[in-house]
Amino acid sequence: MTSIFASRMQELGTETAFEVLAKAKALEEQGREIIHLEIGEPDFDTPRNIRDAATKAMNSGYTHYVPAAGIPEFRRVIAQYISRTRNIDVKPEEVVVTPGAKPIIFFSILACVEVGDEVMYTNPGFPIYESMINFMGAKPVPMPLRETNDFALDTDDTLAKISSKTKMIILNFPENPTGGVLTKDNLEAIADEVKHRDDLIIVSDEVYSRMIYEGEHRSIASLPAMKEKTTIIDGFSKTYAMTGWRLGYGVMRSDLAEKITQLMINSNSCTCAFSQIAGIEALNGPQDDAERMVEEFKRRREVIVAGLNRIDGISCKKPKATFYVFPNIGGINMKSKELPDFLLDKAGVALLSGNSFGSFGEGYVRFSFANSIPNIEKALARIEEALSSI
Image (cartoon, rainbow, N blue to C red; front, side):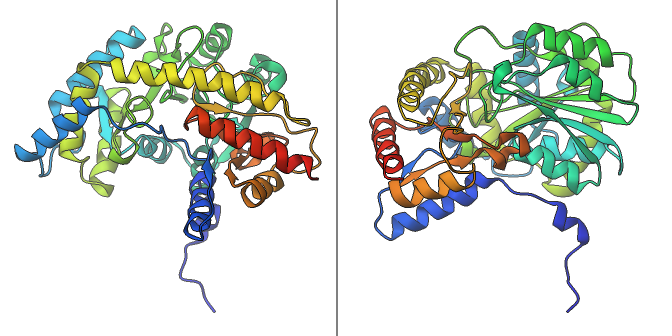
């Protein structure tokens, strides 16, 4: 029978975290107790001041259409925030607000990449990058992140992959799933290679920029001549525990912002009005809750890394950022896809396979430590018991 689906749908991937979450929820409905270490979502409530701002906005009439690129005041606040935190001069017309950060990934590729162009991306990395590259008919060129290099880029390897066909380089640092960060040398080497290329753009996904435990965040956009070549992606889901609010943004050169706004008009019309007012409060209001959340994640990091390293067959480097660990399971006689299935079934612990983040993730798994320390400790005990039985 003839399919109704366009052939390009075969190229579209998924985000395994939501698939595993659905499996885990189904087991909970059967009465199983599942410890969730799979989903990349802070287990904290959105701070009260942000919720109050949204409630006030709804009651004040912010329930209608707003400009497709975002409420002007919100764009100004974002421009001021990025100017301050990245040490660059950002204007409001260089900001586009979207329902979550993902649309900026999609729209940037859609607006800039032709069929056959090469797009470089981190691997293991956020799976939507490779999915969208394939969907657009471009050629994905992975930049491997290896444990031996602390999950930073290999500069020589990265530079060698840049060709005349390279149209876009997607960077995600701090990085999901490894918790790795870019070094200053990484950034400067890439910038020196591409800053004179008018036909190449950098997409810098910085949604975990506020979740760094050692050192400070560096953006390639902050380097000389790189602001105009870089699209910064950021959002509110992680820093302010606002995953369900669907609020993100891109910062980019103004002519590209116009194209991204066109795509917004053709897809979403605009981003939720009262969510944007809440975003203003998030950036301008007290930061205590966001900072306390990061401190708690730092404590959890110590617990999960130490606990995983005590389990035979597993070794785990301490991530420098994010709320993920990416342990090596080379000492266990299971593939990356097999171990999460086994631990969900036998131990009631939900996690993700490393190769769901790309081929270079084989031999690893990802845990999110966005769960309480008692639950993390319970999960570690269950994992150790389950593995001792094989």
